[in-house]
Amino acid sequence: MVRRCVEHWRQQDHDAVPREKAVTRKSSPSRRPSSNRISWMLFKSEPDLRSEEKSFVKTLYEQCPVLKKASTLAQQFVEMFKQRRVEDLDDWLARAGAADGPTESRRFAKGLQADLSAVEAALKLPWSNGQTEGQVNRLKTIKRQMYGRAKFDLLRQRVLYAA
Image 1 (tube, helix red, strand yellow):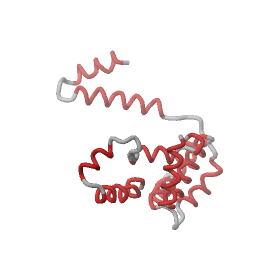
Image 2: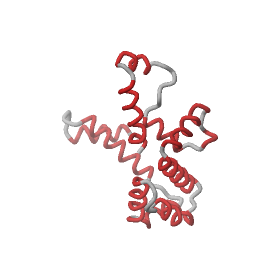
Image 3: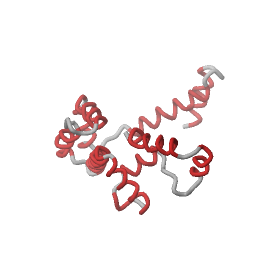
Image 4: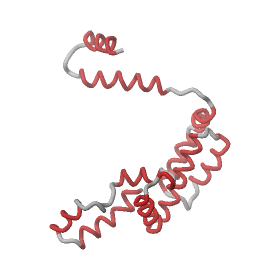
């Protein structure tokens, strides 16, 4: 969503500025941040932003009001999970799935509703499968490193010694 909102700005800059000036402009300190960096700015609360980030986000919200709504929904979702407020989930899903909301938030809400019991369990229960997922990731990383180099015996030895 961020990439689509910023893309037309970049295209306008590219069309308006001659090629040699565009290259020198990229090296200036007032360069526009990447779409990935902008996404992180939108997740942060306002007190956590630096002054130049605040002004950039404010301009972004003025140019694209749908982005402001998406950012607000994302921040509310993060806070809901941090504070484990399962009672706010239905209200958040209704706001995110509203017809006038951003397309991405509607898709996300629809995906959460498809497995609502698991989402509620993640909010209610203190348990996590993070340790299991970490071990699986470690095993897959070792397996990828060993691919095509050795047979199962060496892979087994490496996994056992790595633990």
